Image (tube, rainbow, N blue to C red):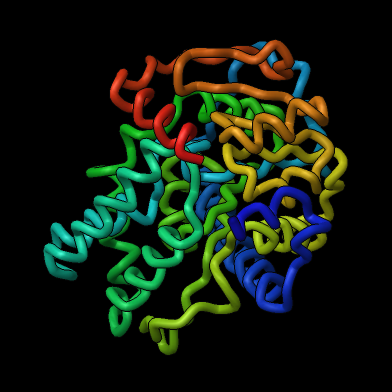
Length: 319
């Protein structure tokens, strides 16, 4: 029930740890973005430049450099939760025992069937991940993360949401992932999708080795809004011209920051909140499309299995 406090930004103000987590995420995101820009400049000098497609959409506004887009990751860009997929990959590489994999699997099943983020499950998963990576080098986990993306994440990207992100990129705008997943994992996903960068939970490291502690708190709820606010200030963005996309009511603080909020594959609470405020909706889980859509439709995604739908209905009745 504590998650109900995130229904509006006013009811759950950012704490000092939220601000710290947000600022740390923004700093890490800007650093990774600058590294990517330098790499792109090197490619351009070598004669490799990305192509562009004809026919720009009416929104996003082409050439508006003070606008950007912020995308939640779990169940918005990707089916399921990145941290659970990452855990599966670490188990395969014998980072932990089978009983811990069972817990990861249960948490992932809950996320997929219920379609909501349970704060206790997510916190337990993060605590487990921190204990698992403690003492390992950041570079080692980054290298493994690349492999795990190919094994468990690449085929779970929602094509429709990916098309929305591409529309912003084609308009010349920067696109950032904003997620409670580790910033290293989020950065890998952003790079693989051709996005600008990622804001994620920052795990403390000393001399390139994880300590098992976080900087601030997980980038969740109000902390996401603080990260977006900090990044917008550093990048000179006008939040009223920016867009944000999420599936979860936990991200209402972030969605409320921007002039163009979108509910993507929304949970019940976000759907209700978005409709009350005339926000745009889109659902790729069953191929349904909301009437209020501001970006051209992308390829739909097939319906989930009947068992999943039944589980969701059962969960809703129990609530």
